[in-house]
Amino acid sequence: MESAETAYIITSLSPEKASPAELLALVRGHWCIESLHWVRDMAYDEDRCRIRTKHGPRNMASLRNLALAMLGVVAPGQGWTKPIRKLAALFYLTLQLIGA
Image 1 (tube, rainbow, N blue to C red):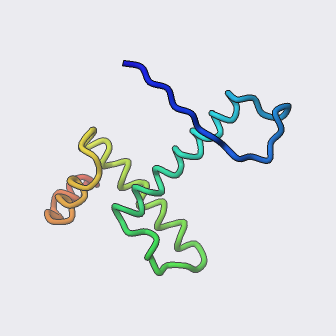
Image 2: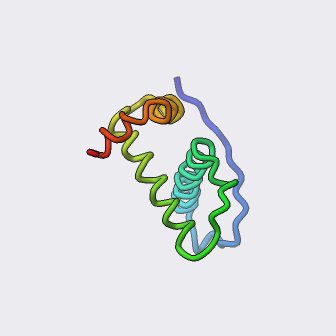
Image 3: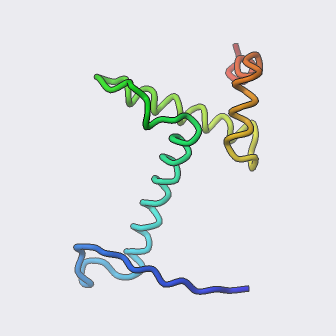
C-alpha cells in the first residue's frame, strides 16, 4: 500500500540553490543525526549529563556511540532499551562483550 505525505520546509535556500531532491536529502540527513541524539538521550539520559568541560563531553559521546554500536552487533533488531537494561543488570556480560 502506497501513501503520500506533504512536508513543508522552511529554508533560506533559494530554489536555484537547492532542488526539492537536495532539500529532501538535507532533511533526511538532519533527522538521521537527530535520531542518534534521541537514542543517546533516551538510553543514557545524555542531556542531564554534568560533564561539560574540556574533552569530557566529546569523550562521553564517543563512549556512548561505541556502546550503541556494540549493542547493534550483539542484539541487532532488538532496539536499545532491552539490551541496555540487560547489560546493566548483568555486568559480567558487558565485560565479556568488550573482551575483558
